[in-house]
Image (cartoon, rainbow, N blue to C red; front, side, top):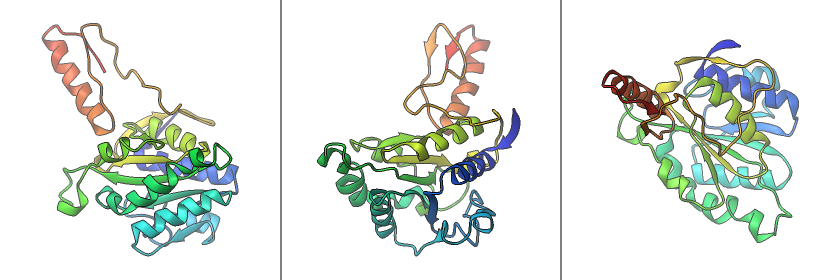
Length: 232
């Protein structure tokens, strides 16, 4: 086990999957030279070169369509949309392309494509950089959506998402990037779609995702002081 920041765990997942599979490549706004607005992709362009870590224009609809076609062509793109606030600009490519092509062609076409983005308020980032649009993408049939709360889950879920043959929207929270957690060594994978019990309890269950898991655990501590055993 190693202590890692959430952002470091994501970078480790990207690095390991790029080393493992030459078809994995990164694209997005300011991810290459700058290393990403939250530095998740820092140093990866130097390690893997500009062909596999590509800066793009700020045009979310175009970028998502590019990632879809790259996935159909046999590569495994990981696209970063800088802020979740701009996911609505990607909706056409997500709903009319990425999420349905596998079904249109009866499984003959795979869509190994990950869209990473981050949202959430509390950081003073402004009205257009603070939204959480988790429910928007969660209601699109054919998309897998994950929102990890810990560094361990962030690494394991991102590695699993990159290996998945279906489109995955990977939602990060800006207030989690500097949180620290123990991350297992080796090829750490977390199964997509399976809940994790963060705290055992017998009286009530609190179901949460992303940063709300942190808040739910705090709430469980307060409930415990009142004699209520809460599962998270």
